[in-house]
Length: 345
Image (cartoon, rainbow, N blue to C red; front, side):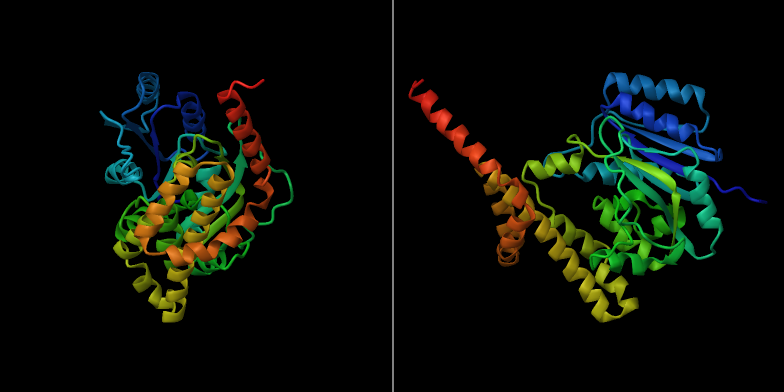
């Protein structure tokens, strides 16, 4: 190989030094050593900062970016992705770039296999491995036979995106699992706060995408994930989705595949988001969280999609039918609360 491409990994962190160390150790162990590792201190805790500085001192491939204050803001919770990740992108010099969270980790040959995918096809602009869902302790959640991420080594990216929208089995993962040619990412608009969808529907479709099922990426799923915390607080993403669709002119970009498909993409993305909103609403309803439900209803009313939302409620109840056990639990909780209030034993 005359030219060994430089591969950039970006990782931002705040308060999970133990999980961070696991993630960074896996990056540093990569069999492909031509790495640029950009670690972003997002106003982190003292213990986290101490670790970042110590690991930088022993690995010349590491670059640190420091923010004195955490970039998270409750009124705009995803602004930190815009700020932190694009700060990393501005510093990146690699041919390819990959973002991962500080609670996930990659197998030891992951980067080598991603680079091989890019070099193996001249039109490959994105590449991904196989996500393996694990719990907070790193234990694999399911060992059943794989029923998704069933696709070939190379294929047109728009076919995967459309298959996902239509309920197929070609892709199932965090949308940010894609490694991307750095110049393609920059030309597309950089990192967007609507991270997963911007990759899967805004970048992947417009080139060939590579896939190596032997490249394992361990995707940790737990209650501390930001998207879970925000959903549990009543945050919905309809406005954020519509902002991204407009800012990146997604419908206009998809016109290369025909106006019918472009319209299908926009409408289906909205329908999926509304369905997700309805499912979370029903869950909060079953769990007896009227304040959270009220917060969601106010946002939905402002979005202009209240009619679509209402139509999704029966489907959402069916999707959450296994959670009906919350109802007797809630009833008993209310009864015991009344008895306690009346001081009845």
